[in-house]
Amino acid sequence: MPPAPRPALSRSRLAVALLATVALLVLITALTGCSSTPDPTVQVAPSAAGTVSPGAPESERPTAPNAPAAPVAPAEVAVPSVGITSSLMKLGLNTDGTVEVPPAEKGMTAGWYTGGAVPGEVGAAVIIGHNDTRFGKAVFHDLKKITKGADITVTDMTGEAVHFTVTATESVGKNAFPTEKVYGPTRDRALRLITCDGDFDAQGHPVNNLIVYATRS
Image (tube, rainbow, N blue to C red):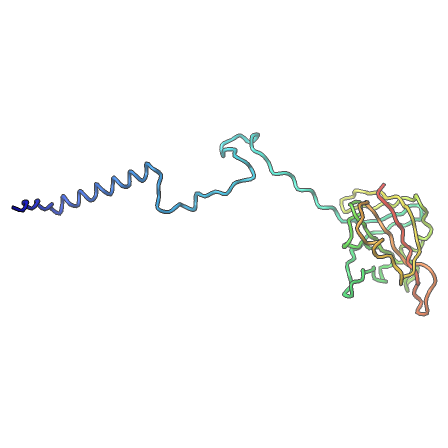
């Protein structure tokens, strides 16, 4: 004889049973910390500040190391022994890759080549000035009088002065300019002053360059 059928649950009792089951599952999930998908908003990347808690006193919080200050651009060059003092304009490269020189109408102003080092920093800093222009004598006209051991002072935009001592001078043909020696890398805090020098060619241009080499004092 087959077993007697169990009495069916009423709709109200079935609903109560289902609600109880759902509540039990929610409680289990909450207690075990489980979840079907992680919440991306709580995934925090490791911080350089370490594991100090948010409520820690300021004295216990590590600070990021200070970034080194960028070198300050030079504003003036002076060679007291030969009576030279000039503000400095910025010089870059011409379209053909050669270094710019100050325009002839600003012959009494020298220029700092921004592609080199900042004067006083490691590397070769280069300052260029005219000897003469069509307007007459220019800023570095008397640079040829400089001697070994002379002082060159470069003052930056903040007023801080850096001193250099002349180590050598040379006059070289423009067609044999020692580019690597003048502009190439060096571990010294070096300075080069450059102007025209020597006899004139058929077009009236000096055939040589005068180069003054100096290192930070």
